[in-house]
Image 1 (cartoon, one colour):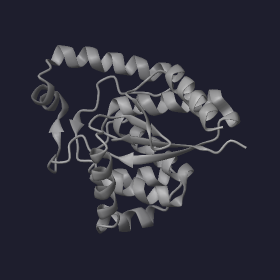
Image 2 (cartoon, rainbow, N blue to C red; image 1 turned 90 degrees about the vertical axis):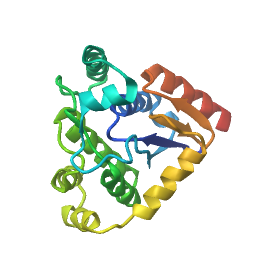
Image 3 (tube, rainbow, N blue to C red; image 1 turned 180 degrees about the vertical axis):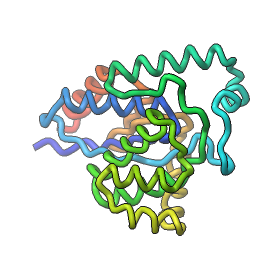
Image 4 (cartoon, helix red, strand yellow; image 1 turned 90 degrees about the horizontal axis):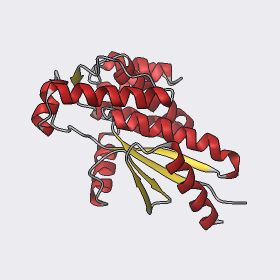
Length: 218
């Protein structure tokens, strides 16, 4: 029997292309089916680790970070919205509104991962929907706890985690590990610890890579 391909999906819930990349990867996984067993894990990456409480207006943030104009941002946002729609993910037409610190979201994702891959995937999708579909604040504990509840996780336990500093050290350690591997852009999909696929690729790209790697490992 072919051993499962270990897929590490390095990403940030603040990244719209990570939502596209995940939806695309899931479509590829559906296409390859049980013939290519996989094990999906989400690894932390913060696009804006120094973002202060209150966040920042997204138009102002992108202009400062990339030098883009509001018109360029609107065109990019529409492109992202259309790509998402093709894959079954809904982006708010007006965009995210603000950019937030996401460290606490990563702490909850680490906890969810300890419950198993299915729980972590469910929470990741709930967080992406909260932010990119509904425009909710990723620094708001109530939003994060509700996402955990939507994913079938214990909201009381999620609240307790957010009120303390559980899993903070583990998240920072994982962030440093992947930065040490040279990961500076997301999404970055690493298969079996050594094969890198970067960006919100179409399902065909992920499907071809998974079939090839499964054949090689077999």
